[in-house]
Length: 112
Image 1: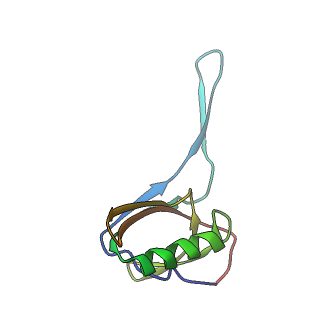
Image 2 (image 1 turned 90 degrees about the vertical axis):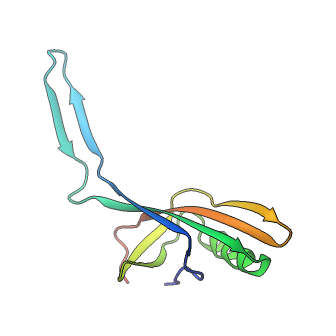
């Protein structure tokens, strides 16, 4: 399994996704239960001041994995198995200088 080729250096936001299933009956009673046994982690990673070669490396990595093939993401001394949650966003800020944003979500059911 591949690892994200360039570590994000600017900012990483970690969020716990813990959705619940809620049903409200006609008499106003609400039934609530957890969808999963533990929350998933979701990450927003930002890369700034990428040279064109670095941007191409990340873009190629995304093209190979898209939103379905998981990969390894080292963070906080732990390695998460993640996949892209949605398409990456690339912005050119100057000639040969780019920023890139991506959202990653934990991929369960995949072994290292």
